[in-house]
Structures are given as structure tokens and as C-alpha cells.
Image (cartoon, rainbow, N blue to C red; front, side, top):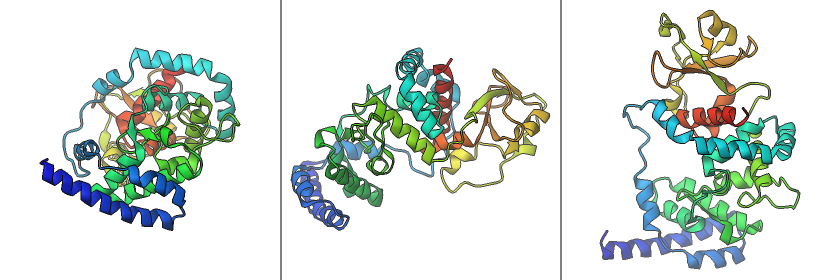
Length: 325
């Protein structure tokens, strides 16, 4: 981008900050916070570049196989660190599971996938990144709301120095958007703050609260690996529903059947026994017929609520299984 275009963009951004100020004031953000933050903000061209590299919502590109993603995202180092984290945080995890019903291993797996157990949390200044994304306009309402939520976090006592994260506004160990932090972050160590940046107790309590709020059903697995017989008729399990959210993700799932029905169709678990006959599940074959498939319960949908990607959700579930072995 040429120098004059950048200057024009910067001027437009500064003008737009006045609009954001009015919206923030209307939602009760304090004048002290606005005066402390808004004068420091400049347009972040790198954030705009990263946003424009994102695929559009109507992509029809072929979906790759899961196996390469699994190999990359389920590394031995991630599993090993997850197992040691599981052991070191065990008493804390047990307490959170008792309170929320969310398995200890699922909380650890989310923490591992999101930030490598707090090691990689991003370095973008959230107010600047979110104001930039709101100004850019591709998803203006979303990012304007998240920018205002960031200011509300500061009004709650979160210091500006902690408000760093991904270019798209996710922050802390769980990589919560600011609006999610305001709604679901929890104090896990009793110090009166929900510190998802430096407190493992708060990070895990917040993840557990998120999953409980999203409808996790205690006592059910997320899913499990199965073998599908060569004679299996996939036409009898076609999913005829169209999801209003993430349709490309959900269209890869079969229709729902009970575990008893799947068993009668010749599906065989690879490494565990069957859950109760009445538990409902869908089938996914992420690497195609003849390869490992998975039966997925309603709890898998809760993982998708965190990040609507089959590869992500499968990897979280498999990491959780590996962590508690």
C-alpha cells in the first residue's frame, strides 16, 4: 500500500475512533478508560493483512484428510506436556470437574491446543487490533462489540498490559474473546480476579465453565474411534438436516443413531467399550471409507462450540484421551 493510501487510512481510522467512543460510552465504559486507551491507538496494517488472508465463508475447496493435521497437532511433545499438566493440576482439575461435570482431560486438552498450556498466547495489543478490525469493516459489528468488551474488561480491573493475544482478539490461556471473558471467565484460586493469563487455576476454571455453559453432558464420551465394515451402506445414515451454523462442518456428519443401532449396523469400537445403548451419536469418516472413523456424541458438538472445525474438535478429543492414559 502506498504512503498516501496509508495516511488516508490512518486519518479515516482516527475519525472512526470517535464513533467507537460514542458506542462505548452508550454501553457504560468509563471516561477514564476511554481517555487512557483511545489516544494511544493507531491502525495496525498487519492485522488487516492477516484478516484478508482468511478464507471466505463460501469456500468449496476440497477438504483434506485428517491424518496430516492429526500428526501435526497431536505431537508427542504436546501429549507429554499435557500428561504432566494433568498430573500437576490434578487436585484443581478434580474440583472443577465436580463443580461443572466437564472432564479434567478435556480442560487440559483445550488449554494445550489453544496455547500449548499457556506458552503461546499471542503478542498483539487487543484494543489496537480490535479497533483496526472494526474499522476495516468486514465484520464491523462483531469487532466493534469485542473492542468495547475489551474496554469493559479494563473497567473491571484488567490491566492494559495483560490485554494481548491473537490478531483476531483472542486472549489468555483459553484464548477467549473479550465478550466471552466477561461472560464466562472465572476465579479459580479465590483471589477475587479471573486471571486467565498467569493463573492456571483461573484458566482451567474458565474453560470448565465455558463447556458447562455450552451444554456438556457428564458421563458421556466426546466420541471414539471405530471401524466401519466394508459392506456398510452409507445411504442409510445420510444426514438430511442443514445446520444454520458451520454447515460445511456438520454436513460431514451422518444422521443420529443410538449406540445400539450403530452396533447393529456392524460398527466396531477400536479401543474401548460401548457407551449406554441409548446414547445418540453421529458418524464421521474424516479420511474416507476404509480408514479410522469416529462416532461423535452431543459432547463433540460442545467442542465445536469452542471452535467450529472437525479437525480441531477431533484433535481435542484425542488429546484428552491421550492425556489421561
